[in-house]
Length: 305
Image (tube, rainbow, N blue to C red; front, side, top):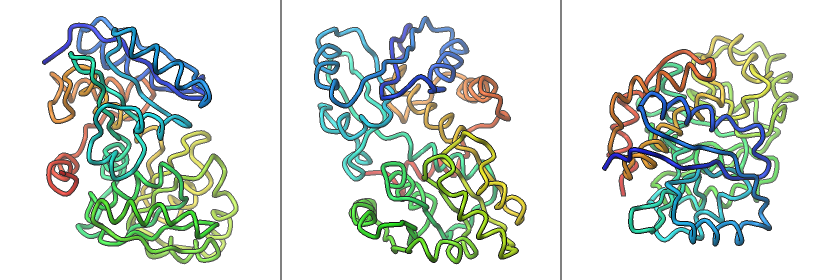
């Protein structure tokens, strides 16, 4: 199934800053599709009303979902992917031809792709996640997909890691809780780091870590893409590591959303997908690149239900 037109939107609060309309517009233009992709600012308290109207309208193909709506999207879909079942949050809602809605989490693929495209990752990487929120859940699953047997989760409040322990069990890996006081130590030995903190949330850590004159060779993805480079990313790069901005994660997760919205199946590549991905990269000023084959292989194996 390939749709000839697409009607979709990004949902959340706030969404005025979202780059999703730019990325999706570039994709659908490259595919030659008639598309209308908009922003819909939907506070959490207005979700039920919005969702009832969207279901009744019957003319939507899909939604990209950001916070604070990701848990609600997972809750209210007719069917959820194995990743959504494990994580409890969804960033993608796709409408099938019969009106039923499936929820997926393409953030996992976005993280895996952004990290893999930035630099070499060992087959069994030493992995670290900074933070304990919804993006951290996706990061734990993504790092499992890249081969990590254990993921060190660095949090200010250890209780925040409890939900991630459940996620890890669901996807088949383990997490170890690291208190914030030991964050710098965790960075020193990491092959891959995914920072899921708010913008500037790691500035103090970056200064502390830089003062230790570190030397690294791994990859750091900072999900907070504005400002870029973040102080943590700059410190990591100066120490010899490779860095990826959150916008790369956004690009790559959107590729699978385009698959959902046009093909109805994230396993079905869109026509000329490399060209589509390159156009999305250009649209936000990033180097052209495709999704690494290692990631697609993991999608079909380590992350398969």
